Length: 560
Image 1 (cartoon, rainbow, N blue to C red):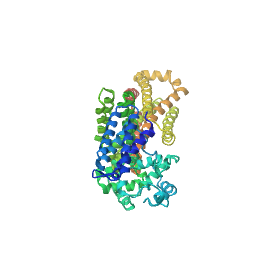
Image 2 (cartoon, one colour):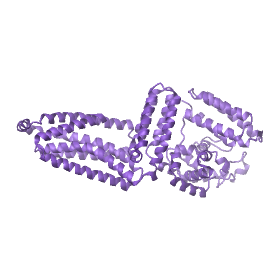
Image 3 (tube, rainbow, N blue to C red):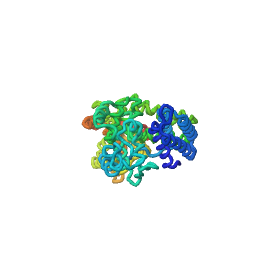
Image 4 (tube, rainbow, N blue to C red):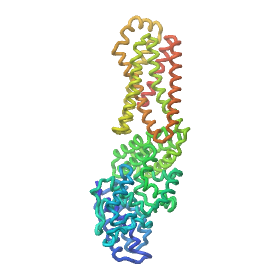
């Protein structure tokens, strides 16, 4: 594994060259000999560091790009050419040797302001103009964060790197002793000086009114790596400055708008591709599966309610990606599939953006999810209740009612634990649902066979006379409790996960309305089933019930 500091140092050198090369060369001529010597030294240093990194399929390409960068600097190429090569190489370096790129949570702007005043203003000035009380005696002088042209070439991550490591040969010391969240807060503060409050106001309007912008910056990882110049390539410099002025002052807005778990899906797919390129096909497959289970599946119901065609396309593309990872396909083919999924995720993020959440789609999603999951459990529980009534054993109903009520309570506890205490991975969730389904299918199959055997009225009368006194003992009562608990808990478990995804999209009132409508319809279905099961002759009741149990056994076995 590559040393994190070596990779970060190489990245920082590349970023420094991309920003500062213009101060060394202009129009093919050296304008500062010392700066030009520094650029040449840094380019050679990057090549040396890349050659020392652990061997990977990408390393040779990185070394070739570094040599190309050295050659461009050697012939005194343009600052634009150097910036393009340096930024491209820096991006490829982090893809090949991933290092932490983003804070774990949104930085606190107020903390950043306090830290800047305490630790940075004496050199860089209270306004970031580079004219603090101690600036005059420093050589080289402190950077002016208000320099818009330089700031457009610098990401928050680059500032974080400088804060963490310092700059050799200058008064800029390392602040590695500060906690990580404080260094990120400082980086965001330093990166906001060149972008004005007026721009931030316009950026807020753009951010909240244009879903395409939110799709371009879906998470903190993207935000901290993005420079105003890079964003300007797709939306124009004025818009880029405004949007980043707003987000660097309010990084929590990126966290709030991130829909579902698509950021997880992107991250897992990137890790899967890296594992595939290393030759670790098994690891690539596991990460690809995690991208689906932990990333995409939780937001499937919401996306299906808003754009079912897109949902199906993503689901199919992720399945094709997993198949490609298992086959002997090339790394380029796998990378292309990841790129295609990235585009589909962009579309999904636009569809899942808060202002794309119509009241109708939220209502429909909440209604269909609860109706689908609730109907499966309802059919089994109602059949059990009807059976006990036919058997004239109402005292045993408390076991069935206790089972489904206990399942609802357990489901609520599961939601609380998964939300506030631990994380339930996609694989663990699928195993819970799968084993629960298979076990319930086995139980239902035995119940169905038993009911089929009682479909003849004379056999039922004989059974009543000879067996019923013992059939519903305390032990079998707890058996009924366990069956009711199991089949209901499985559906509650899945419903809670889906509703958690829906709740992040807003429209809480319509979500509750959809759930209420589904509960009302389920209540009507339950009443009708119990009402008409009373009038069925005993032979037909057991025949129909056995068919129902057989059908549900197939459904549960398939799910398992």
